[in-house]
Image 1: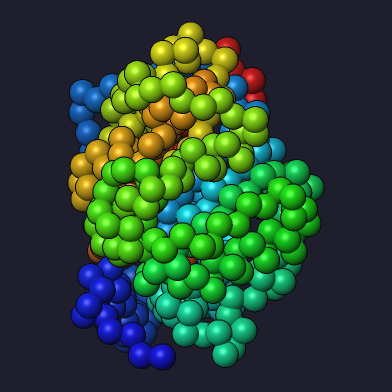
Image 2: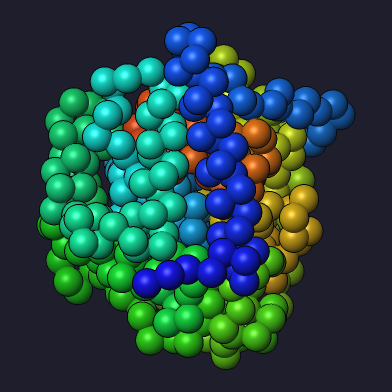
Amino acid sequence: MAFNYGRNPFLAAWRRWMLFLFACGALFWIIVLGPVSCGAPETQTTDKKELPALGATLAGTTVSGLSSGAYMAEQFQLAHADIVAGAAIVAGGPYACAESAFTGLMPDAGVQILSATRASSGCMLDTLAIYGVPDAQKLAERARELSEAGRIGQIADIVSDRVYVFSGTNDQVVRPRIVTKTVEFYSELGVPEANINAVMNVPAGHAMITLDQGGSCEMNAVPYIVDCDYDQVGAFFSFLYSPASEPSGPSTGSFVEFDQQEFTEGLASTSLTSTAVVYVPQACEKGRCRVHVAFHGCQQNRDAVKTAFTRDAGYGRWADANKVVVLFPEVGKSALNPLGCWDWWGYTGPDYLTRDAPQITAVRRMLDRLAGSGGQS
């Protein structure tokens, strides 16, 4: 099947980026040095609010994400399986899908190029199906290998999780067959069928799906929020927090902007922006609430879409009804990450799949702050 990159802005941008990566790779092989430094310095911030210590309860944390955020939700779930109890994967393929077979066998720059190629071809466009990519069974074996090495959590902690998986039938960015492999991956790990809610019949494009916000349902374009008369956040909150309470009206809590950079101290390049947002229901201002981490997709941070992801996707009112704090961490653009994606192919380094990954470490530090001295972890 031929793909017309010119008609899909996301894929056209990905193609331009791939050409850039190959140029970096060529330079690497010429000068025969360590990893090519194609990144940009991270933005520093001053006079920003601190993420509040709310005495939140970390046991029973849930995660969700779209596209690269979906991959990151899986990575965070597996890395911190001891505290994460459920995940909502929207338009994302299986864990470790983009990892190159050459990881650990060649310098990082070359691996990043190979992994980025595998990501676009085998974990988005689905052009490697003839070669068996992605292979859910092998990826589950990879997860077990990392778990046995102590680099992610215990697989036994994943088996009891609830997992919501979604793919729109009109998704032109991450093809639906890729997402079916996510369902297979969790099944291979041992998650029972009753704990997996796969929704694959909505005629949506590549986006978070809402009752009445965003563009037309079939759109595959920024801000990746579409109106399909389907309350997606409500669907996965109802499944992850079963039984969940229904909202009685619009959100009434506070969207608080905070400084992310304090959580990156001592870490290699994270690509985190200077600020991010946490949503705090009124009932959670005095603590004891659970936490949900919502990872945006590529081209969906606040620089790109303003408040579309944080406010229009529908998290606030469901968070109010169920006394859940929602953390919206955020990554920005860089030369190695020009679309503002979460790292699911290794641009931050070889540990990106593990609890030692810079982005995963930073987000865990944010959760620990939210827990404060009164939280249970």
